[in-house]
Amino acid sequence: ENVEAYNKSVEITKGINDLDKVILHGYKGTSVEVYLYGAQVTSWKNEHNEEMLFVSSKAIFKPPKPIRGGIPICFPQFSNLGPLQSHGFARNSFWTIDIDPPPFTPNVTNSVFVDLLLLPTEEDLKIWPHRFEYRLRITLGPKGDLILTSRIKNTNTDGTPFTFTFAHHTYFSVSNISEVRVEGLEKLDYLDNLKNRTRFTDQGDAITFNSETDKIYLSTPSKISVLDNEKNRTFVIRKDGLPDAVVWNPWAEKAKTIVDLGEDDYKQMLCVEAAAIEKPIKLMPGEEWKARLELSAVPSCYFRGKNDSNKVLEGT
Ligand SMILES: O=P(O)(O)OC[C@H]1O[C@H](O)[C@H](O)[C@@H](O)[C@@H]1O
Image (tube, rainbow, N blue to C red; front, top):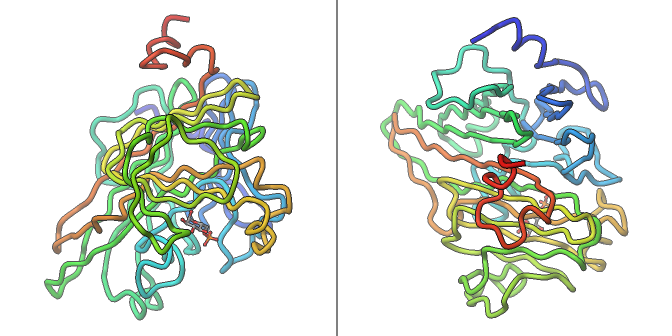
């Protein structure tokens, strides 16, 4: 790898409240910003300098409060499905830059990336008594795609396995939630978080929004699309190792109860979260789990009626 080019494209700086932040500068002015606090991606911009991710107008960048927006990591527990604080501790832990990660194969060529590492603190071990190494590579691909690769290893020395649930809690920026539809989850089973996680089968043709939504879609396809008709933009989510997909929008009433969310913010956001929830991941000592999330944003006109937006873009 060309170390010089790498240094030019990875900027280590300070963000809000002096928190450490890494900026990946990609091809044609694309960029990604990530806070070491939570390993949280808070910005992902395309070549027109347009922001793809939603961050709350009232986001609090003050530990131990998690940051409301971008891509929080829910680990080792999704929501309240266990004894830990909601969504676990990864999102309000301080990660470090991993300067010597074990090799990744295959690597994305012409990309810029940063490797982050989370190890449990003594405090974490008190509430979740398992040693692990969580390696996260955040990659900005040559076409402006954002790729998150997770490798979580059980490093317990006492021979015990552990289990966890997981989500990349992506907040997509949308122009108007009422004009958005999600494709790829139709007809699937989901657990409704608003109905004690009762299991239902989705009946509609596409998923649209006109009230509070909080569903865990199960065994979802590897590709899901979020169509923002007003902005003429389609987000394409590709995932591997993350079978479930949470779809969340708090809508007006719930939004009022969330202190770090502006009153009208719910109209500009939609969470579609690539996750592993229904079947918790179990790791034996020495065992490693891998997952991959790839996000791309394309003009909807390229996407409509096409099966693979990448192919269409390559032809332009
Ligand atoms: O407020 P937070 O802890 O960040 O959680 C925000 C939301 O995350 C997920 O989408 C859950 O399904 C929701 O039930 C929860 O309200």
